[in-house]
Image (cartoon, rainbow, N blue to C red; front, side, top):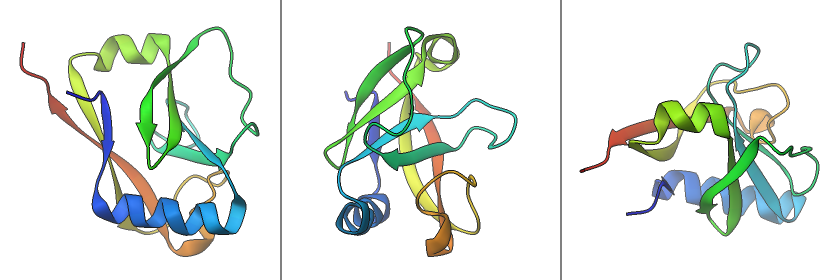
Length: 109
């Protein structure tokens, strides 16, 4: 089972954003400013560090998470969805009037 996946609505938004901005990347935020929203950037615009790992891909875009945060969520599948409202101020979907949202499902052992 994939560790990260996306709903059809999220995949549709990703395609729209790729058309506007080119290749994208995601980072699962754990910061205080954006809560736990998945952040969408132009590929290469977010500086990854040694503490980040690639969890998988959604819509052909790499999806990263901090290793410490992954330790909390390693028993779950992250499901990236879209809801109405404003997201993280640095995430590309903000002007679209929607935001990416992480849902999770406990993985079978």
